Image 1 (cartoon, helix red, strand yellow):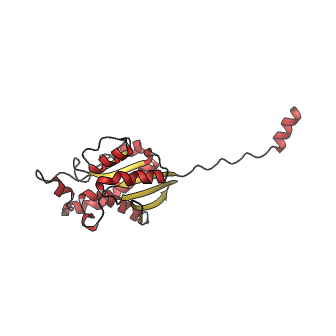
Image 2 (cartoon, rainbow, N blue to C red; image 1 turned 135 degrees about the horizontal axis):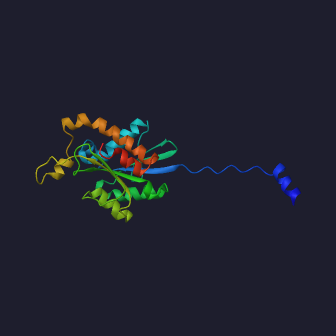
Length: 210
């Protein structure tokens, strides 16, 4: 027995190298409506934030099934950016398709949308919650059959008179908002990367209220 142990110590096979873990993937879904007439509207802030992030990472969107897709890698993570082509109210179909196709866990999903209840430029990351009257979130919740997914709400303010809500969200940014928007877009892009690298809770603590 002692001889066998000695032989194993001297000539035993080398330990196998641990298998590499698959790169973590994240689906970042920015909500908006397709078409040039909607491109600069408040309701399309989800698209605009993803456009900013894609530009910073030097990647381009390509038309794929149910949406435009851009992909980049950062600190060992893969970020898949999705701009659904289903129109806002049917966003759930695109989100579910890409979660399934890329085998991404729902805790690695982040949905970006506009929020009338937040002042312009305010950013609010939450782990879960109700749709808050947002039709895009409402459809995603219905299709996924859960509210347990992270959402990033970008404030667009509520400077509209009674009965003018639709006109406001489908309206374009005013001059003052346009001046402030680049800095807010930059902050939003950093939040998304932090979500994938630092995690939800730390990112909420770092960015909410900034």
